[in-house]
Image (tube, rainbow, N blue to C red; front, side, top):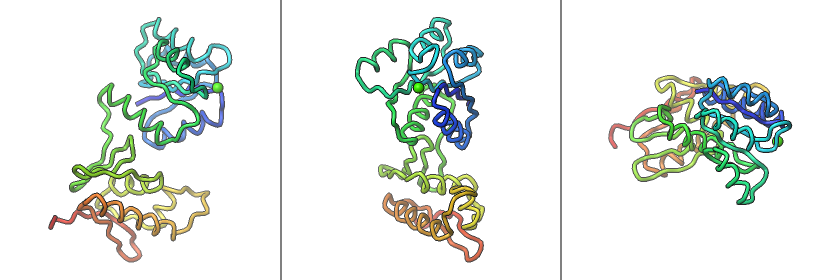
Length: 225
Ligand code: CA
């Protein structure tokens, strides 16, 4: 899945690129409307994340031009404006969805997940035992029950679910979830594993997070359930 981020706030654009790359997407950035239009017209993107207030061509105009050129790429519009009128303008221009800044990254990921799902094709949950993790919404689901994971809980759970038989040491989890530069310590991992165990139990999941001394953590399914 390829995403184009058209956003003139470079810090935000670059942060979004990192976010989506981390979720397994390919992401490109354009910092103005004209460049955004050139990239988007290539037709290689599955989704455009489009800021409204852009230098040169604004987001509304860009969306209008792409739709006029019969480009069917999904468009998620971002804007600092929250008035109803702006939303309507955005949708009239051919945007598929509208998100108001500032937004929570989980909200953004959920929107992108929902849009791509609507488009079809994207596998976006990891299943183990009686439980699944929705990668778009960070919801852990077991039967009728579900609970939302915090960003760090989600990253840890995703890591353990992706490679189920494998042991992840605290050190590896720290590195993968918090990153090299973080000053988080191994104790943080223990705390978050504790949160995850509570959440798994609260929805009646039969997944257990096993601790093996010195080797770290891995997932098992309780067959008794
Ligand atoms: Ca802007």
